[in-house]
Length: 116
Length: 114
Image (cartoon, rainbow over all chains, first blue to last red; front, side, top):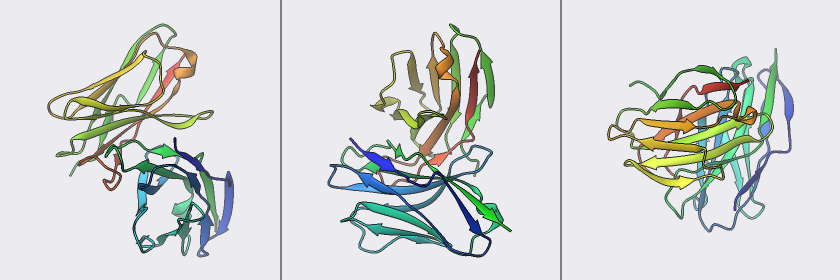
């Protein structure tokens, strides 16, 4: 079984500052993928970034980077230069690779609020 | 390229009724997954379809069922609705299977059971 824990229910960040959203996970699968999604108030889930468990380098996508520490089972999302449009719910998720399926396990989410 | 579409966007039903939700994946995508999102339980995986076959199923009662058609469009059905079925139902499509495949989500169907 897989479990994702996001310990920050809500966070404030000042516009233009960087922010780190925490994510820890637990799995017995030897290989897996880690994801971050953004969910604005409209409800649609927007893919942000992906990290494979065997990837040597941390993933980056524009202002998003994933701080992957395999030994600590953490996959924190770093957003640089926050913008007002970044205010949303953020979900960390994972999927095993072993069954080659598309079955995401999500954390409880973190609500990020960007202050002007 | 059009994104994932879900119909209807909003639905109100009463207990005991049944409901069918529809999901049209991005053109060329063959995998469709369904998720339920509630304030209490968060986001939970319902099932995944690929090439008209259910490949994975989450821990939901048999009242929840689904299918996929030859054009990859998918429907999910909930019979004998309960108040606890009120949720946002999200559909996601991807090109193939495997964690490295990005899943694109639709806007969701918000179901309210009275």
